[in-house]
Image 1 (tube, rainbow, N blue to C red):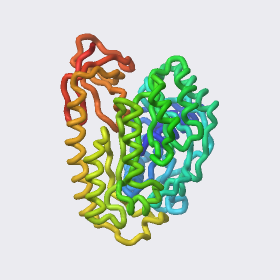
Image 2 (cartoon, one colour):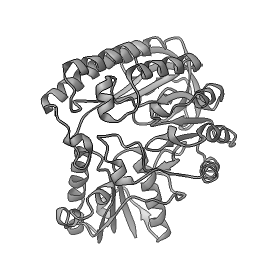
Image 3 (spheres, helix red, strand yellow):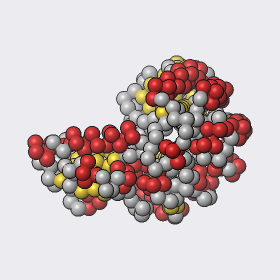
Length: 400
């Protein structure tokens, strides 16, 4: 029996996909890259915002044709979509044979859906932050912390199977109690070369965490710090629990204490109540702080969230205009920061014939380092690359 798997959404969803694949393997399934050859098709869905929901529904409807044209006997929808819309799904998607929600138990995945040299490791499930725009608490439930021993056991298992880079993920990694101790213990695992943190809520960054990132050699000098906005009124309406000055102070402290740190962030434009003045303050903050990496999203009015009921909803046209303004500004910032890297030597993990990722780049969301190679490069190998050129989001260099 063969299974065809599609994983939609973020890396947090991908870890759930790996667990589902492990269960299918235990039931005797092998995996195929062709839906035409599959006896079972499973889509692990995202439903965080409307575009993700639409993508999930469209993907399932598209794959449903293989129940007639191919070998497929079972089409399964898993993850956030059926979890969020339990009652509606059978009517919306009658083609689907079974619906599976999101997991609440932490399980060891024995199958990886990423490249062999890196792995996402989820350290918590659910969220208690209650940001006013967010559907995650409804979908994933309240915060549930994974035991440190179980995390380290998983890291050791991954290391034995060739993983060199551990990427810790959660809805908010910084809320994990004793995260500094977890990073220190992870650094002691033989075979692990890089440790990376994604999704760290600014309100939960501690002095001790900054200190461990600064001092521990295996923890890459990279921090994903989603600020979401920089105007006090909008931050308050978002329920983010910090102010613009708090962000400015935190970023200055991180850069002072962690030399050469790469900071990534994400922001939302068009949140209810965001007028021209509020947007201008966000844009000016981005220009002032100059994040190394930045993602921008338009606000989506999601049913069941406090923000959906707020006054001052912004038109889709204005949201798109503001997104484009942010991206134009960030492209100039990114090119400028990349240009300053010319002449530096960066540790780079090889991912293709002539390119890799530096410690400053997370998989799939950040840039690449293209290498003018003088020898064959092995995927997963960590090499030193001297930067000789810069593009807007990518770098160019040669081996040292």
